[in-house]
Length: 155
Image (tube, rainbow, N blue to C red):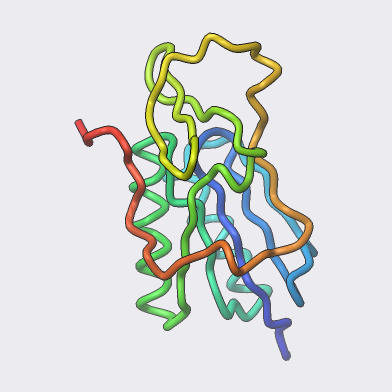
């Protein structure tokens, strides 16, 4: 059986985990999972790899949940190495309309003039947008550097 050649985008910076399947840069299938990234990412990828031929993996590599970022990075990098599939990354602000991303306590990561920093957010909760899979995959925003973007020092 010939499998469709697709690209995969993962956004695992907070719950829910979002995974999009793209063919010709258009979103054709998506997964939204509320389980822990460490539990559900392997299950989702098994299904994807069984159904499709994945040609590239794209990921939001931070900022956000340290554990989810670490798990995603190790898992996707392992898939990349073992299956010889390139993996590229970009920051999560591309997927939530550049709104604050939850950090620790009452702090949120903010991106201003290209600089990401944790700040106390005292704005309206309506200003905080959820992450969304784009309907069109803009590959120009991704880079080969997929190292986790922690911003705060790892504890």
